[in-house]
Length: 231
Image 1 (cartoon, rainbow, N blue to C red):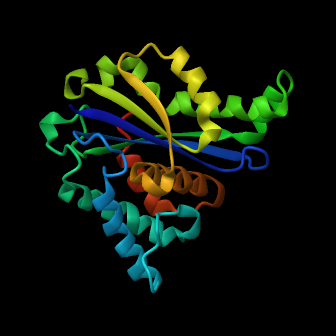
Image 2: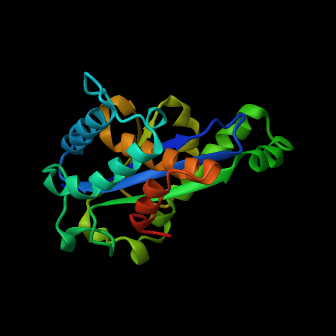
């Protein structure tokens, strides 16, 4: 059974930051345990981080907020070559669901936090406003699923699994699940430390937001732009 995985993470504090970004990391795998998928690629990229930063020990996960822009650029650059040696992924171009040849795709949705909060706070409580922002971000990165025939080849996978970092996503996931008219899809909460795909979602969300807010991370953001199969 081939599964289309979509690993979602966010960057930015919904309460205070002007820019809040959600990203999805998409890939196909015949492996059923998300913990194992992309693990080999993640470990090789952590070797790269350890070498660049001079750490005595390999970090336990790729945590974008702890990396500088140049290192993030190197991580995304290495990702483009390392995935082809990862047995957990479907990499053959004729078996991929999108037209680009790369086996890992991204969707990225930046929201203007202050504008969203101002509008939503007129009608919702503050907590609900934060959840509504998550709904908007999550629905945006999953938008290709609403027009699959144009963007995704349904015959390349048997089911869809959306993996979200932390229980704060539960309410938003329930809303989006109910609104999507998609068969064979499931949503689940995963720990990013044990789910490499979510760590790559974090890299995308953080790098994109940082490029928008600080005008750095240009290398990482540029490479990620090339990996967006839906723009």
